[in-house]
Length: 268
Image (tube, rainbow, N blue to C red; front, side, top):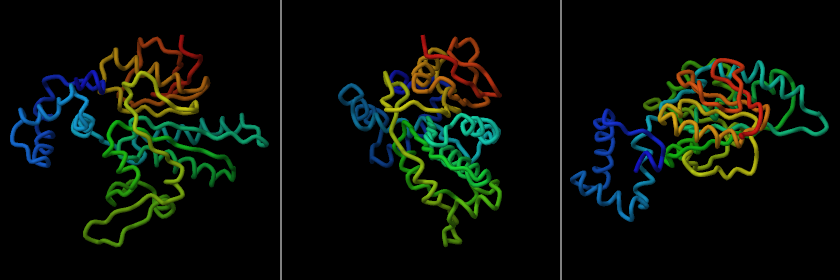
């Protein structure tokens, strides 16, 4: 049922991990056994609200600011210069980026910071938006709050820390918050990649689908990618994780850099 609903593989090797994570949920609910929890979970054939909370317990949600930094460098050095070259100044187009499987938001905010740094350093002007989607409502709440432990920005250059993050006053648990100007560019939405279609009212220029496909079987990967590409413009960019592969997928894309692809045509 988990695989059918969310696409996430649940082989027997994950049993111990899953058991440990669900055990915490049992304690929160005051439930004493997995049997009792299963009855609660499978109420109405898996349509209970509790079933929708399962992604919080089966997803790793490992992410960092500027993780796989080469992708953000590619935006600055290739995608944005190409975008500016093709943009008519009198009809300024809004650059639209989708961070799919955004986890706790570091990827989406790293994208927005990359946009701002390009605008600032090049002295140019354009509008942009980042749509951040995830299957975990708990993660979306974290994105909305945009508050992170101080150590999560330890690798970020000092000038970017000063420019885009606010420090908390607490010395015991030092935290930072992404500044409002950056937060305003990131819009949030719940999205299950297993849905039959994604109800966006726009096509994206860039889609980040990184370190999400690894949860899916090859068959589910292709189905998800087909739907994702339906929401990407021809000439738009798809970015996946370095550990992921699209070999033998037969998709309307062309590789242009490590784990970066350009859409060449609409799906057949």
